[in-house]
Image (cartoon, rainbow, N blue to C red; front, side):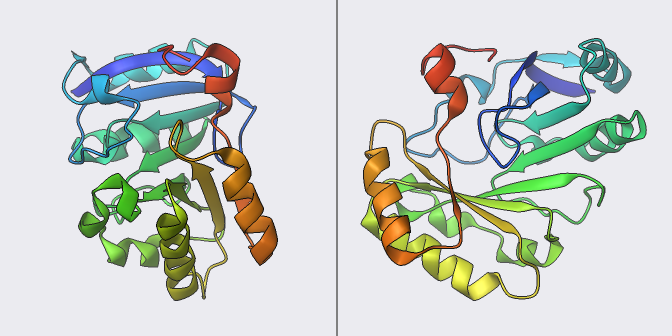
Length: 212
């Protein structure tokens, strides 16, 4: 069984897949409490479904891409099986994780989007650094930036771990906490090999809309 907060179809708002239509499965539960969290409703609300029903609801959208998100989806024992089943059904699957749960159980066909928590999140001490060993070149590492201190932290982490595999680096300004133009200016000034991103779904539907 999987405890699910919501299943919906929308355009991908983040990552290098931004703008593509996706099915989304938001699993319930999170082991972190980031200061800027915009999905607090996923902490504990949700309904239990058997895995085959989740797959049926996802494939009913008729889309070719699915994002498994949360909360922290990998806290649920059945999450890796859901990922593998969707891949077997021909879906391209992204898994959004906060990097505090081991990634070695994930199907290697999935694209891992690992959100490394900066000091501004209040949760930077909980990262499982060994997870970087399980990233491949097609995976992505995301940093939400609230301040110059967060920006420096992100650069240090990238410099330390982005060696053998050249995964994509994503930097996002924390919504309502850091002006996007400031982060963009820092990145351009440093010539940083990273992708600046905004949360596209918030620009289209507003910051408080659920199911988008």
